[in-house]
Length: 252
Image (cartoon, rainbow, N blue to C red):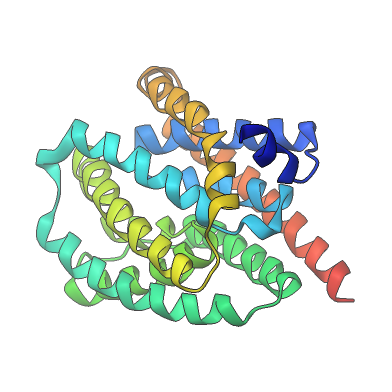
């Protein structure tokens, strides 16, 4: 059975696969220490390897990693804020599912790259946003669109919580990403964009992600948050530009 599954998979560029594994590792380290980063770092790398995979594999990894992080800091979750923001995420995910089902592959790569680049710019220039119910709903909605299309829906919701303490940020974002990623996966399954191929591809990165989470407790003590953040933004931005360029070549 395993040989049959292996035979059905496309040839793998091991250099790209190694880079993607490294991106997952870095994303898990960053998210384990800050509450966000897995999708923003690893999603572009996985899409470069195989655009047909879509955002599903990273959403599955996010569900697993968020579950572990919630267990670690469950008591710090902002439950009212979580409920409000998740309501916006549900609507945004449904809208994104309708968009995704209509996009051809070349257009999806372009949209993916533009949204990732937008997320990077938002992280750099987003400024401070108050944690009001209206802002939570809007952040959840935009996170739903970006998260379902690209699996990187963290920048908007993170901006709302940036003034909160570390435990509150990590716990609440983890709970938000757990619930929202599960819902986004449900949307992808309904529109036929997540199946056995995506699930099989995900399995290869789970051990790497868990190692990254374990390392997060060590890295956070020796590397400043600003240094990690700059590295993440440069890597994500570069990957987004590669996707945009490749999509433009396909379209033209």
